[in-house]
Length: 440
Image (cartoon, rainbow, N blue to C red; front, side):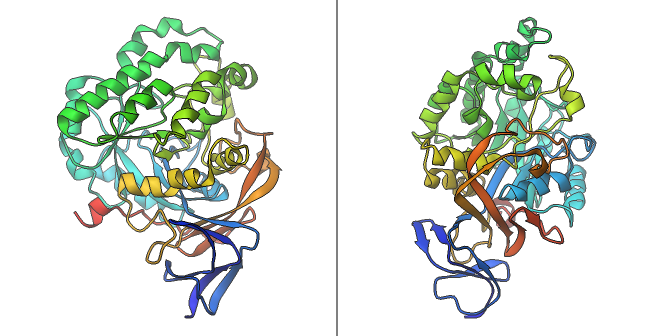
């Protein structure tokens, strides 16, 4: 068999486990595992591990309207430098991504500019509930996103009546930012001027748990599947573990890595995000439930702001931090330090997103699937330096951190878009396909 591309010499992570085999690619798809003959291009992966392409199902790339923080090109460039082959981008832009025209505009902006494959969420509002069933079926749409608590931007559906209307419109899984707006409004006085460590006191555990309980009840009444984003409390993960028939959930590398006792004194407002970085005990509890199998995916919640914006005194400072480029390096380091297994990380960054969002043709290394690969050196020991970062914001809370495990190559549909921190000549990202859209 003559193929377009052959990956040779690496340890390839198949659904059944790792094997030593060549992988053949033609027409952007995997056509052979083992028994591969000549190829138009051969990539030597000796000493490296070939993972299914990493899918980051929560990023904020800020375009249109907030391009001083990030845009689709710079955000996706950061993604592929970090080994990410596909992203789902969030709707809190200016204007909000809450209509067919807004989705079409983002897809047009992404064409020939985004380095990785991509899909865009449509934001639920109190005014577009009736049209969401149509909007979620648009090509290139990841589904519907609900903000139950205010965050960056003005997308908000906080009351039960409107939440029920949103959940009643459509069939695909709905992504949820679960913080209770009413409790947070009542607790505004808990914020201490100039002290970002008061952020998790204001947006406390109960704000998260109240919202998660509420949305579970509403989802069950509507018979609608939900996906709870960036879970930060062990109690929520325990509850979500009891409701897996209707709810999936996400944790972030930031909440698995940072602890408030260290992060706020060291990073100040650069540690501020929603939901907040909480205590070391919270972090340890997230790890407990992760190793119990409860979280389905790892998402970065990449949400950059400029240094100037972050330099404002709390609470005027905006919430959010970059993360798409460091998602995989941080998780590989956690594997190296024994907190979880590489198999678990692969499941949460490829098979997990495919399974819960119904992605067509991605999420595993298997014949017939898209030739998306993340090639990593599990033994490389290196330090996160600012000059490696591609996000327009120019900073990371993990700058200066020494890690074990490094992304070496990013291959998207058979196109080598990144190798050894060098980018290809042009961006090749295309819209992600979904079974619910492609096949009804």
